[in-house]
Length: 352
Image 1: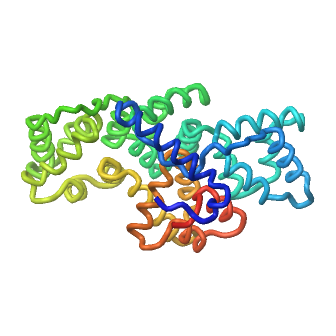
Image 2 (image 1 turned 90 degrees about the vertical axis):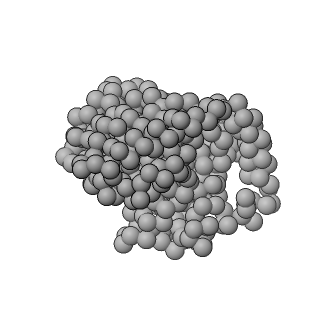
């Protein structure tokens, strides 16, 4: 793991990452949750009142001092940002979110306001926005529902209900249709098996054969069988199933998906396979495509950087460098500009 020279002076990021990594390793061995590889970690010697006063001064400055807002909010953990918001309200007698909305605009505003939500709140609000009004933003729905773990989805559903007084399942069912809706709903029901230490070779073989017989082997696709295997089996099990699948089918799983289904359903299954195989590479590829497209798809870039900076952005950076032969930091510097670029580079946490 390479940490940019930007942080060697204080060494804070390195120390925080090392302690985070060690504590997560313990968790990983007990199977409780995935280890985290954040680029944004809690800052030491944190003084929320001082940060709140600096933000208030930055907002009051003629023309707004965006740099100070970026420096503070992109280098604090969500818990710390929440403390700053509390202190800000005490000091300025107004709500920080409202003040930021008034002071910022465009992509920078979207990014900073995203950081003021917890990861689950942010995912929930992105899902809600993707289903609001006419037409559905299927790309966002697919990205979030297909890439989040069952634990994350359970939390997102809870937060979604708190925030919008509606069930996520109901909104998805009302906004999508057919096999695509059935797959998303199967995933959101979070019935995935827990990973087991015992490898069940018979079940791996049965599932691989079932996937083949439900797809490539027959005319038309038995999507229900695919849905249940993709949404209910543990990820280590599925990785072995896809390997075994090659002994039945002339095509690998991704090629089979492309041959068997089309449109949003195809995108969803492909996203699932990519995330099962290497979730961080999936996000690295998404970032690369979003930045390459004409007029960088800023919504996609913002969403991935904000939602992953306290989860696994350090690993996404590693995958990006390995596959694109240049760093994520360099790609952001090339494809974005202004204060928005500064905020993204700060979340990125350094050059590789």
